[in-house]
Image 1 (cartoon, one colour):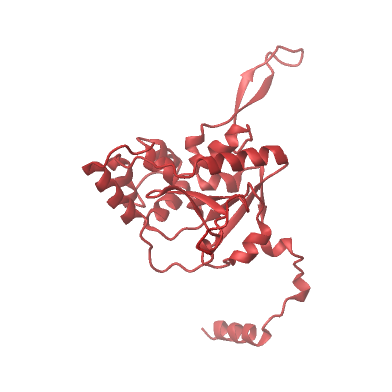
Image 2 (cartoon, helix red, strand yellow; image 1 turned 120 degrees about the vertical axis):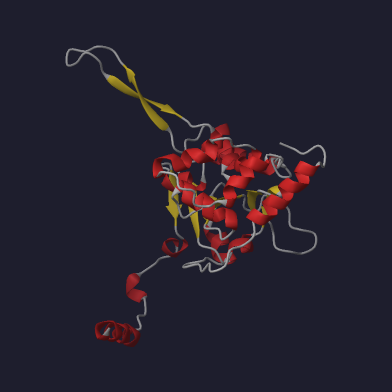
Length: 270
């Protein structure tokens, strides 16, 4: 995955990656969480899903039929404080241009996010997953696969819904692996923690009730097929919402009854 020389394809690949990561206009988060709230809520091993606003985000959302276009991994205080006094890096993520990097929580203070937490993860396995991700810092992805990146410049291709997900795997290379949640899935694969196992049926022994009995066999997908959406849908990851973690009580909410009444009157007059 690492680049060994700077060729024309490398330079073109970096330029395309930069274009794909340009921000789109008109993005407005509904319920962003500030960095301090995220820090109090997140635990090492958690996955932070992000609703991105880059050009490539639109393609990922469309192809995966999901709100989430990016995923970052929380390592807590495992990384040292920066010597320059800047904010501590507590997230590890993979970007198309930079590869595997560590970033502060404030990077996503203006984005819609969701926290996914592996259920029942032992402290030993949590440490292994964190160590795996830290060990990948500095990993670069080969951007010479120009055709892999070009398809993301067409965010809404006329493809039937059932085939959209497969488009990510078709002809994919390092750019797509960087875009998807491949590295995080690989980290959990090291400890054999399931994300979205596929269930297949296999013939069992004959019985008096029927000719064949079926038993379920779980097959963990190859890590390169995972996307941010899969952690959201996984039956093995719990969704953690900061507001609910700190004693939310709907009876303590203050409603603006005048504004509500005015809105109702305006709607009735239309």
